Amino acid sequence: MLPRRTLLKASAAALAAPAALAGAAGRSAAGTATASTLDIDVQNNTGSGTVYAYVTGLALDNGNRWCLLQADGHTPYYPSSPSGTGAPLGADCSIVLNGSGGAPRRITIPRLAGGRLWFSIGRPLTFLLNPGPALVEPSVTNPSDPNIDIQWGFCEFTFNSAELYANITAVDFVSIPVGLKLTNGSGATQTVQGLPNGALDTICAGLVAQHNADGQGWNQLIVTSGGQNLRALSPVKAMVGSGGLFSGYYDGYVDQVWSKYASTPLKVDTQAEWGVLTGTVSGGVLNFPGAGSFGKPSAADIFSCNSGPFAVSAPVMGALTARLSAALNRSTLLDNADQPNGAPSTYYKVSPTNHYSRLVHATALDGRGYGFPYDDVQPSGGSDQSGAVRDSNPNVLTVTLGSVH
Image 1 (tube, helix red, strand yellow):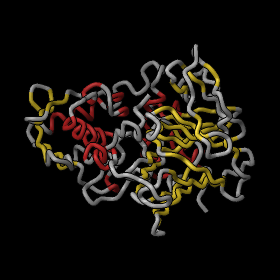
Image 2: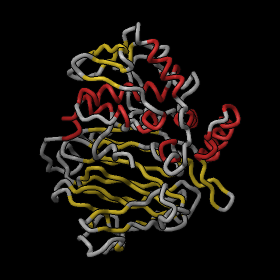
Image 3: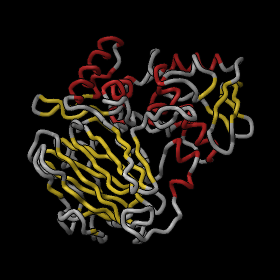
């Protein structure tokens, strides 16, 4: 499973400014930058009268223990370590939402890192515990998962002593449309519109069309149940146990990139303390003197952004990885030797490219939402692609399931 972006913050923003995400200021007054809890209004616009919500994360004020909210929507539950694997939760953590189009259900969260607000339609989700305790979350790649045939999804957040950061995500899959609205203590708002109702069918139709166009396995990203589209997996998720899906997909493009930068310098703005670094290809590797080098990535490395040459630990290499893998997913490296400069209108214009991410952005009401792990890479001062909201003075976060009215 990909690292949870709001816990490990595998994002370009974090690599550029980790202190802003770690947080250090104290908190004391509700509704201000010093509050220790946050209200979240969850609006059901799915068309279904049976929708459940769940909150999970690591409790920053309680030793980073796993924390869930109980069914009342505000009482924390800190699970104990069970004696064996696959143990049930010791509390009811299913928060029942009001009917579609009704009033939002207000919940209240403590400070959490790596937080997720989960949703399911029709049936509640099953969370289990392993010794530790370790929380066993729903999976879309495990056929024996008890949630495998349920329509579910999530958005992500971290609420710490410095800020609230929240985002919608399609890094793993597309299912239930989610939108965000953050109102701060001064009444200012930020919004992420997300996908419209019917977006899953639109994206699935696009994946079939792309398969028909290039013969690649884009149609294999589609998961159905009862003859209906249930979810569309991201390429990296669909490749789990697929037996070679997208093998070699990017090879020709990477060969062209390596050939170009054997004679042309590639400039990458790390947007951090390392400034602009220049790389060239020599001996089959892309070298950035004083920082490190990259071998040729495979399709799996590009889609995941964290394997092969992109499995790095040094912060400077992380900053380079974010921008290189973003450029490869968006297929901009042959046209743009200055990364991450370039407008979103230039993304996904050549083949091969990450057509799953292309379709996510094309279908979103405001064009935003993580389509791959480093989809927050943007030029300095450029437009956000990731579908995130953040504020040091959060008051209420409104999360809408289904189209935002």
